[in-house]
Image 1 (tube, each protein chain N blue to C red):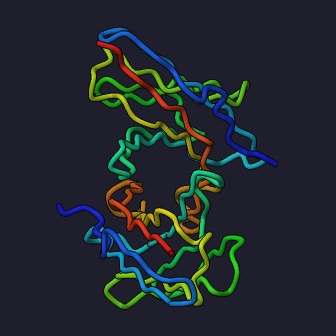
Image 2 (image 1 turned 30 degrees about the vertical axis):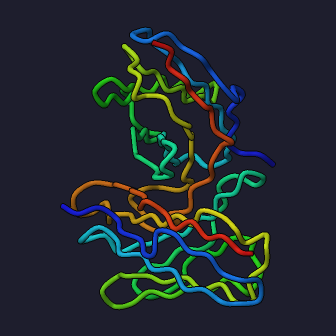
Length: 119
Length: 115
């Protein structure tokens, strides 16, 4: 069963606009973590943002914020004021289990969204 | 501090050969995970090592193996290469959350081409 779903294969956004990349997940664990990674054409996976299932506040990192809606099992990435350098593949991923019980660092990834910023 | 490093970055091998890829985690990180990325299958988990022990294994044939050394560096080996093994192999290292907070970062990957 697919655990991470990214329904937008590709998106085109005008430079300086905000963009929301969708991610829904499925897990029976109460403790889990959600990640977003950016993968430019070079191939490197760049960590953007992390949200723990028990975190009460939505995570933010600079221009990135995570819109975490636990009841809906969604963890959408919001990029404010998009830039040309934001053009890349974006992956949502989930780690199941408590972070405090360090073990099982396996991430399950979605299929990704290719974001293209238009000048 | 230095990021995750992977060597080599690019590799071309012939079907039937074997290959060894190396990953050095971020200093202080003790867990190393490996992933295979292909256009058809996406990102798939291979295995994870912590303190020289394999803790988790994905659904890959026995031709895929790995190990971790006492300095947390890890290697993965693929024997009897097949054309379908052509992929980007990514390594990720994770911190122990009891120390400085939880992190999981990836290296630049090794792009393997099997001909």
